[in-house]
Amino acid sequence: MCLKGGICGRKEDRWSFFKKSQKKPALACIIEKFRLNEEMKLYPLILLFAFGMSFLAGSACPPVGEAVEPEATPVQPTPSDDDKEVEENQDSDTKTSEGDSSLPHFLVIGGGYSASGNQVSLEKNVLYFRRVLGELDLIEAPRHLLFADGRDRGRDLQFMDPAFDIPEVNRAFAELLGSTKGIANQYRSNGLAPNGPSSIAEIDKWLKNTGSKLKGDDRLMMYFTGHGGKGDKKTPQNTNVYLWNNQKLKMSDFTKKLDQLPVETPVILVMVQCYSGGFANVIFKDGDPKKGLAEHPRAGFFATVHNRVAAGCTPDIREENYQEYSTNFWEALCGKTRLGATIEKPDFDGDGKTSYAEAHAHVILSSDTIDIPIKTSDAFLRRYSQTQPPKEKKEGGEQSKEWLLAEDDYAKIIELAAPPEHAVLQGLSVKLELEDANRLKEARDLMNELESQRKKLAEQKKKPEAERNAIKKKLASEIRKRWPEVGNPYHPNARALFQPDQSKQVMAVLKKGGEWSKYLKAKAAISSLEKKRFELDRRKVKCMRFIQVLENVALEANLPIMAEEKIIKRHKELRELENGILPSNERGT
Image (cartoon, rainbow, N blue to C red; front, side):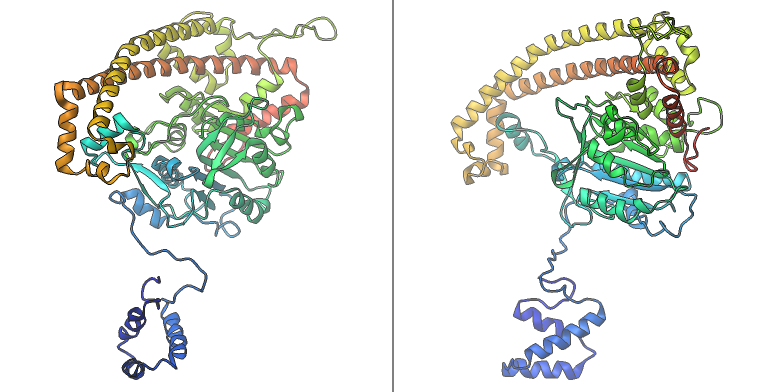
């Protein structure tokens, strides 16, 4: 089948192509003659001539063997301003060699591993990032986008519109006989017009064609908004990202790919997938701390540590519900939320600028998620420093400097904290109501208390769960007894139960004696307890963030005691890179 006036396989369509041409009467007469006489000897010649004319008109069929899909419009929500922006603001590498050399380069990789894992929030993250570049006067910077299946016309994006109506009987059958997972989800093709799909081959292609040709004064930022997976038991830090079509790219392999970039080109990473903290090890050779530091200057900011999932991916189209790392990170850099509200940009050192490190600190302090954000210097310090003095004394018999312990007096620790860490520790102390001198112990005690409350909620949840399960079993049994065809959901009689007349009968059976109402009530009670548990989890996570930053301050203070001069120098360079800013991305403040 062809598109837009091309010559197609059906006989009537062959002739309809020529009928449309009113400007060629001679040709029309010839065709009519052959049609009336049913003579087809010159048919191949006519086809060739017509193909040439249509080619000149710009509507020729594709070459033989080229697959073309009909332009069927998938079910989509009403186009938003973001959708309109997509058409006007496509990513391009065309300025890579001709553009302003002072502008940084951007490589954005995103989307899920399949349609079922490619939530609309990932698409909207890319759109928000584009708006951020616009706010920072960087929209003309060379940028390259690899997203999901690229420009394939297939429906690769999952979304959930609250206005989408799900009949009561459908939800009831899903609750009692199957699963409610994904019942409200719909699918469409992504509207980003990316440069290509998110695949290892496309990443390699960009590195070869563009990345390897960057110069010493070029700068590169890489933003990944997608999904990630755990490392294995032997190498838990070697986590991975998932690319389209279930491809997996390990941190160690990703690090080797970054080695293709010029050694003098600084790279900033922003990665928000689950287990993203493993990628903080890109500062080491092959991503392995045991092999020492990589020569390439790299710094990165990650949604959470290597052994935890991250918040954020959702099919919900309502951006006001989005809570994830990059939402807070980008708003700190540009001063506007993803909904357009103006916020005060963090400037913890008072230099009038907002650095990457300050944006990262803003996330730790302000985000209300389950994430424990981490940056590359955190991984550096945990490799080359420690919070406790070594058992063996240094050669010479005495320590030349005093060790800073994480459990030391808080006044002493906060005095040594850099401005971003200082702001985080002070801010979280207020939110968690921490006041003791031994702030580490106080935070740990609070964590234990929150865990105790969490266990109590788990006990409270057992009663409504048991009630829900009992009712579910009873109602499911009743349905199977009356309509045994439901054993196979594709049975014609089973599918007929979703029709209006029969669905009323089904719901009447379920609601008899108030059983369905009791089921929903038990489910609501469980949901309420889950919300309370989640609130405890988020407060507990704030304690974990506080402890991590407190330890970072101690580790940084102890580094000069532990490490050689070249390691101390590399740490300083890394911190300077983390303190860079957009748009100039200059090192240091």
